[in-house]
Length: 458
Ligand code: NAD
Image 1 (cartoon, rainbow, N blue to C red):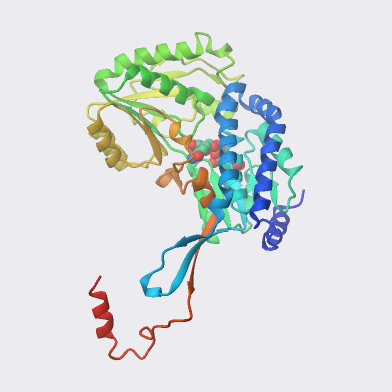
Image 2: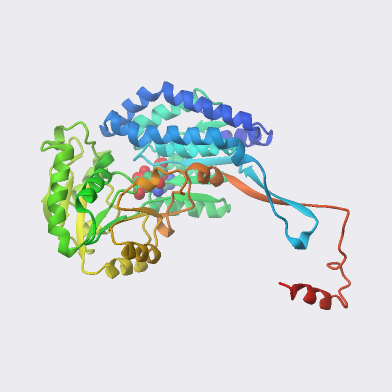
């Protein structure tokens, strides 16, 4: 395989020859990608199973379905989104016609994580293609089976001067980052996000950073506890908790905690049975390194449910830890696994204050039926995105942007927001020659009075 430097050079030449500019070219590439995803679907499902022991249903629901919806959206809107947008002119430029051009950046780098190894590589790729860029895609080395199939699917079917998948670890990514890109789209941890941002700053390369953090799930006295338990059980334990926007911890009004925990425990058993380890619907932790990191949390607080684990298979049972405080080890970092700590509050103001004083989460969830409480909470707290009376579901709607806030990310994507993330908005004013006001030209003597009079109308 040619070096990253070579690939990027040929991509830049391919881009400036104008190959990716025609809408028909981009559309054909998206249709080809769609066909490839169908052709490789079984192989991809198998690869994800080899990486996580994830069920076919869960893979289709959480990875493939979203990719298909995103492809359909981009294919049908590509022409409309790429068209120069005519806007009204400024009176100060009269007469003129003003446009915003959606210009592709050129050669873009996409770096993706292991937790949804197919979705998080392909979803930004769809937007980058639609926007008319050449792409270097670097999937995670951790989900090695899935990344290998992605590399085969793309590299055997697209020319490297257009789209190229480069496999590799930190060392390889560091080598790739030595090259100048026109945009970098990174999904991964906040700590690596800082490395990427620092590197990009050397050449002032624009970035989108889709990062992580601890996403609280807040439950107040007015919540519907049965519904909350079902939705939280799904959102926390899907993909064995390895979801960037999974509820990281429960933060519940102390007066309803005992009632809620009884319902939550029953719901977990309803979903996964008593023998969760042998249930094919429940995935494994990706590798032993992550397993060992998570295992250290299991003795925090008081074990309320679960707690079993097996280092040979990287199995961790869905686990609820009660009596947790912010000083416990489990509350120092994003959990990213099937362990759910429970904290309590006396007053919702404690939650709001905590939000003001700490890093802003990627997601925040509020379970409540009190409209005043909901309205105040949404006005007072800062976070990337979230839900009222649900978890995760904001990721599904492509009409809302998906991204973090502060340390949980920079920029956003999904649907048209994804397309916009991969284009530069170039503003161009077309002036007319039939009229040319002289007022702005020197000499300025005696003109101040006229301009002051004109501006007094504003
Ligand atoms: P990671 O940051 O370790 O790795 C992400 C990518 O960066 C991988 O491709 C990896 O090869 C590369 N990488 C790792 N170290 C690097 C370095 N020093 N220099 C350059 N590149 C490097 O993240 P991960 O463990 O794969 O994924 C888990 C994290 O990603 C969690 O924090 C999770 O919240 C976050 N995440 C965020 C989103 C989102 O949409 N916001 C989605 C999924 C995961």
